[in-house]
Image (cartoon, rainbow, N blue to C red; front, side, top):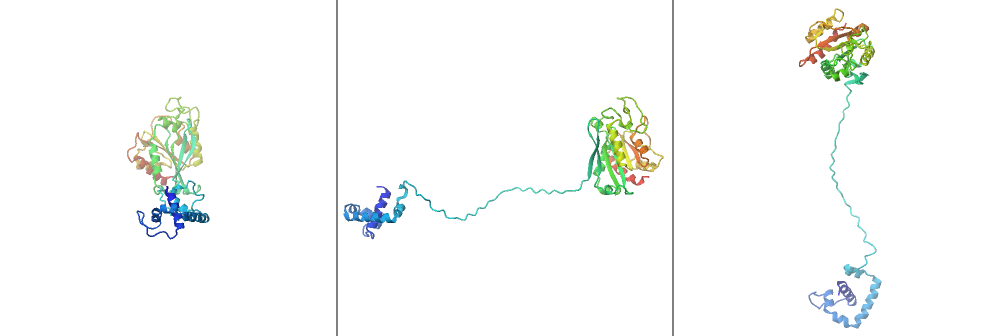
Length: 339
């Protein structure tokens, strides 16, 4: 007999004998289960109980299957039609998320300089000019009589590149190191092709310092170190600088060259300024020997704009430690001596 059948019989017996029998003992002890197993034969033979059991079935029909459901366990082959309602349980979920938060603090500072391309070389390289816009002089109105525009050209002959070091020093200076009335413009190289190829000429084999319009003359032929080009200002680099100087109208322009280690003296109004520059840098005051000097950039600038001061500084073959900074300070120092 299955356990569910036993439970059914016990249930029926209990209902038929609601008070049970309290006097029977056995392995199940006294009470409901003890009465069942102690009087099995007695139940089978008693016809009265059959009637009572019929009554029980009637009762069960009225009461439903509540008691049987409680005792039947896993013998029910058909699952209940409905599930017990789920109790609302308040669940607190603590979620710890490991998040790496990168805090980026971006401080927007005013630019220290602006770079502008004023033209292109024969091979298409930009000719850039750098304007120090973080200094007081850059904020002065164009017509302010105290404003002094200074232009420094680092390279015109592509294999004479020491002037680039002076340009770097001027770019690195703090605003307080530059006179408050100076508007500073820096042109690293007007011959970027020559710098890239480490050669004197531009990519057309023209010596740009013989190609400017003032007293231009045909010098030699391609391949010669002084070849002046087919005509005055024939080269795109020369044309770019001519137009830029016309636009900027600098009060003082310094053109760096090598390797003569000297500065040419002057008997004109800028004579004291050149002498002071020579004193500050240790350069001897002497001219550059040899060569044919027509179509020269600094001469063209002085003769075209007679109020401008433009001069050549011949550096040595190399710069000693600190020498570039010495020249940078000298440029800013002699501004006060401008005629």
